Length: 228
Image (cartoon, helix red, strand yellow):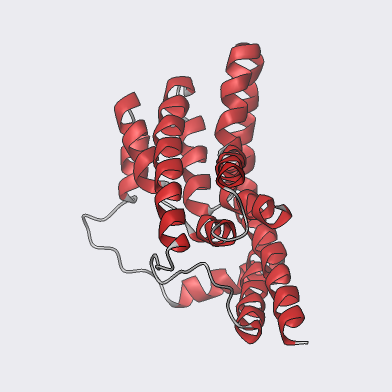
């Protein structure tokens, strides 16, 4: 269960979801947009998660992922690569290396290219658009697939349902906390949401790096345990 909870926190700070949260809370009067995005994302995530879980239980695969645990050496190599990416995101030297690489390989944008589809929609979001974007981007990602693989064996149906609900509750914390705040103290929440948006824009890369580092270290330990 602890591993599933850790994966849920990783999913909460997955770059795509983090970017959407940062955009939503920066909009004027974001309460209704956050709620619509949350409902759309939660419906998609829970329903698709249950479907993927059934596929895993029957021995099938989704996007190349199965419920089986990879060989120990595979876990170790994936963990080492993950630690490298975490170092790039967390360290000043690593971020300098990324900036230097970007300077040497500038992306060639076509004249008509601009922000991504998600950014364009959320920047002029209505409640309906926020709901659709929330539903569109919250299909199971890598952390969720790993958690569902763990759930596919050794858990009762009731435990599976509880842990899927817990995973999603944690994954959407950055949306749930402001929504509760708007109910309890709307005025304070307005200021706190604005500060959160600024903080996410400044620290999002470090957060993702920390999650990747923890997860990668866990993979290395799992691989070492499987090979010893």
